[in-house]
Image (cartoon, rainbow, N blue to C red; front, side, top):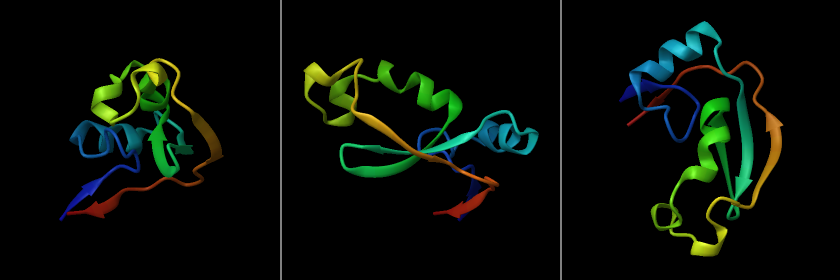
Length: 82
């Protein structure tokens, strides 16, 4: 088990915990491909740059992923992940 930030993309990176502690990013709960995930502001802005193959998505969705904002995460905090 280790501490992680709320971001489903970069939360495993120790730098993400430092950024969380400094309050550098807001965290967003989004819906994509029928799944609810949490992304930090940086990963949310960068998400369209991911290759469709990486996400198992159709190539035509690349650079225009069907992401819908659900809500901002209030009081984001570190969590345990294994």
